[in-house]
Length: 134
Image (cartoon, rainbow, N blue to C red; front, side, top):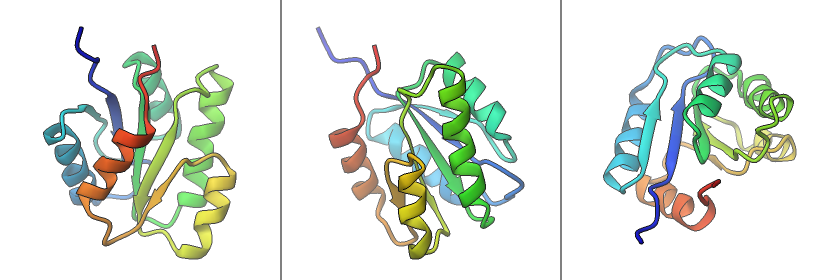
C-alpha cells in the first residue's frame, strides 16, 4: 500500500498583502508530491486553525512579511492547542529577523525559513520532519 501524501496548509496570517512567496512555496510543495491547501491572503489565526482542522492537515506552513510574526505565529499554535489539535505542527517563513527565531521556536514553531532559503531545502525538511497524523 502506498503511503498517503502529506497534506500541508499554506496560510498568510494577518494583513500582509504579498503572497508571491507563499504561492511559490505552495507550488513547490505540490510539485514535490505533497497535497496543498492554500488559504489565500489576510487570514485570521482563527480561520487558519479552523481550516487546518477541517482539512485534516499534517502541518501548517505560515508565510508572513508584515512583521507581526511574534504575535500571529504563537496565536495559531495557541488556538490549535485550545481546539485539541496541538499535534498539528506549525512551521513558517518570511521576513523574520534572526533574533526573533528563538522566541518563535520557544512558542512552538517547529522551523523558521528566512529569505534565501531554497524551496528544495524546505521540501527536504518537510520530508524529513513532518509525518502523517493518522
